[in-house]
Length: 608
Ligand code: M6R
Image (cartoon, rainbow, N blue to C red; front, top):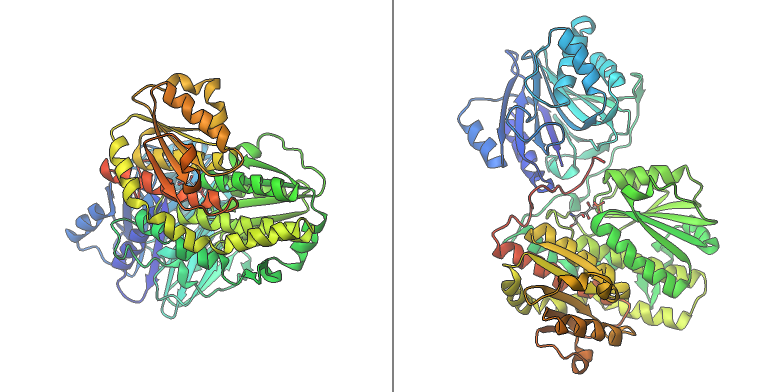
């Protein structure tokens, strides 16, 4: 989604802002721009399309300055176009970059039009620029004007404002969208994502909702919405917050798929000892909650939702605790009934997803025992809002498609399942066996990646299709759902997932000799049932492809299948997900798609 970067320094820093914006490219955007104070009027340059267009345009100008803001835009109000790109400027004096949505901008716009302001764009952000300009006519102080402005805005926003009359400061404001300050000795910076801050920063400060801040090269001060000074804690930035680049890989998505054995080690590290999940995996408070727990609600979006679905199968099967899993945007609006002694779990890679965050805030007021998040980005909004966080430790994920983050989420949810079973004293022998199995995950993932050539060959045979069906049963049904999600977002081919048993209740009508049907086939108690489903497809002439556990080879009568080593039933969904990631990746590459930044998508979806 939209990204913000700003730097104020003693030296010329437009190129630093550009570097920061490049680091936000992975989040998805359609236009970009940068503005700087000069003391002789704001200089502003914007381009549509990729960052390289902005870099080219800048090379043709002499724009420089020591106080600048930049933006990558993902259209919400108004189509992607030059006039709608940020920064938005009022009277050559005020420039604003903004993430989020101003819900009452039409009312404010009408007031500003009546006051003689001319609009260049269709955006809500231009209203903020004019409004601050208008307030400054009487207020004279930029911070005070921003405080007044913020009080008039309804909606979600993170914004950075510069003013040419006060050319050495940036004013920041945050409500429901992330914004973080970077602190170095003679330079202060701001970004919507820590990864976009200069690597030279010594500390970061996460602004809270309702906060404003004034940053100059040598100082920073944070205020609440009434203008009172407030203190916010400083943190050392985590080295994992910064990307090391693509290294030897062609794409970030490919790199992140291949990183998974290592990511699995990190997610497990220090969390299993002597075939037991360690005591410090969870806090004492959470342990007390798990003891009396009777119900779990899991809420998430996209791939993280699929992680929740798999965990639901694990928890209900092993621990017999009722587990309901919801899509975050549905949960909030379905008037959920909170059952007795219930734990609320939010799963999110970014920790910023607006729907998941809103669901969590709603849940906090709804009578759950405890709120837990499973999250990759430490200190993100979801972590800060939760009573406790289990970090997935996958490292920064740049590809818009979630790959390694799902693997690490499943590992953490697997550990939680085992801990819960231990606390409830359920089947200690089985729990020990499952813990042993989970300890092998890194090695098993490496083996699965060895099948990439065969997956590539399958990709070549289906890359020209218009539709693909994915099938799975039981705890592998969410893996089929994830396969379909990954496939459509990266290949742009229509894909659907079905619980294999559901096929004859409708979707079988789609199957003919032009329809690839891909199924995940583990050797579990549902194997015979799945084989019947495979036969149903073949009898209708469908092109059946099977990702199968080697040990059920003799039972499957199908020419197109790829074998995987038997890994045990518990970790099987984590392992079978990997070939589906590879399949989506290869088909996307064959079709010439931008696999790291698929069209129309954003890495973290910070608007509802
Ligand atoms: O950061 P989150 O895990 O909360 O993001 C949730 C979804 O937006 C995300 O998983 C999305 O579906 C991915 N593009 C899937 O690859």
